[in-house]
Length: 161
Length: 121
Image 1 (cartoon, rainbow over the protein chains, first blue to last red):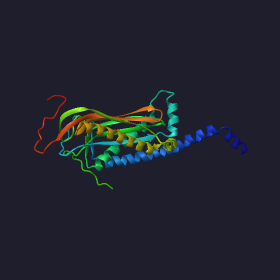
Image 2: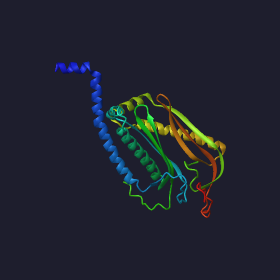
Image 3: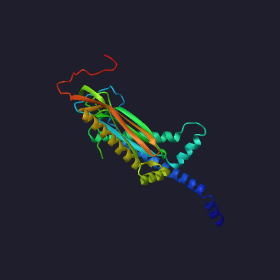
Image 4: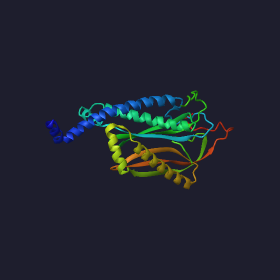
């Protein structure tokens, strides 16, 4: 017992790093699962809003449009940060970052759609998605586009909870 | 003031192009919030403080741009673009720009207005 305590105290930095690594692995995984489940739900809820990134296409509308934005910053967890360093030794796909970026983009688009929905629009076009990195190790994604009330959108909005 | 990130404005006809207008803000994070964000970095997930900060900064940049367009007597800003860049450690610049234009609202019996088609015909 005394030996174990002495070992921990002597290698405190390493022990903390290892503990954070596993804490990051466990909670990071839980967070990601929760986020993905919520994204699936939100996307289903907002599926009636047509989005496209064509700038020159003009939906038929009798009402004014509005610029809508959605942005989110997501942090990478400790496990994935360390794992990314390990992966970059081999110069392969950084799958852990691919997942993070996909989550952030989907969330930004969902937020943009939700804003459009709350203003009573059913179509967004001319979409731009922009990404920037955060110092601490994460990404910020901004999605923006022009929302209009389109008369040709055949999709009916589902009942909101 | 109407904003659009397209080359036109829905339900409007652009009559006059005035000038390119822009607005920008440079922001840093609050020290305490930065520390909390550092903790969040262990477990991952959304950085709510950062999201809010960047949203506020973006709103401010847009307001500055709108102020300039108002000075020019514009009705709307089209072709709006956002860009973000890191200018110093822990600080980021939000830059937004667009073209200030004069526009008139289409009337219901004015459906067949000539629409600009960049591909010809």
